[in-house]
Length: 330
View 1: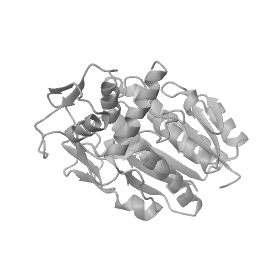
View 2: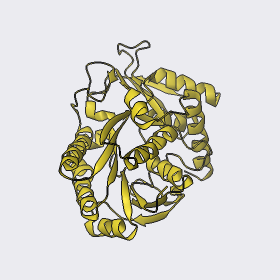
View 3: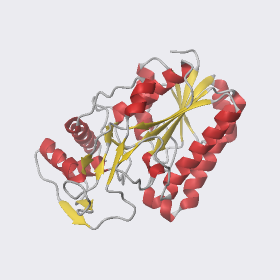
View 4: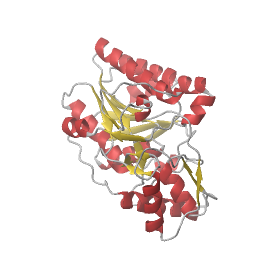
């Protein structure tokens, strides 16, 4: 704990709100900046909240100064891959240009620590199913490229200043707060576990499997699904690491093993106690057969140990959250 504050951009969103909650529970002073384009004010359970945008240099500079911020966790971003393909400039404007603005404000304010929400999409379609931090980065869409460009900015800025950073490359986040206080609320979400839970609750007519002929055990794509609680905890561990004098790092954030689309669907059906309406379709362009984190480094560097590496628990918390949203008419 410190007398300084943590600024969380995008803290009203899915992963951000879980991280803000954990920061608050740990006794940190937190200020959340979110433009509420995708996030929800009621999801921010701790600290101060400011509605605004990371592109607003005057606002960001004032927040950093007024709240004595020494650490920034940067979630704010557009994250939908097909949307990035159809509107790449929006992604470069929001994910890259706005982040450049944020970083400039951080340098001017003397912020020392920066934790960045990156993505496994920076790897593109890797040659092997498991990606390590030194796997070549070859994004195949503007979303992945926009995140990689921020990684490059952080690398160069870290070399030119006192700013130290941890870049967390997320794999497939899933699940919700086990106590049901917050979860993923964004309409039209594309994450598989969220979509499956919505279909189970009748919010979607069908759940689509894109590709059943991949070179995987059951023919469907395999991904590394990480519970949002464990992912949020990695951000707190990253802050502790940086405050303890740790050097800048790039770290994969996953469990190091994967589940197929069919395995996820089967789990949701079993936990829910009823079948889903599943429709099989052809592969989508650009989807690799398997994408699994090489996840040893994050454990070694941060001392991070996952607590929710259980697909049944991920499905259960997702279904419980969808029921809560349904009760609220959402």
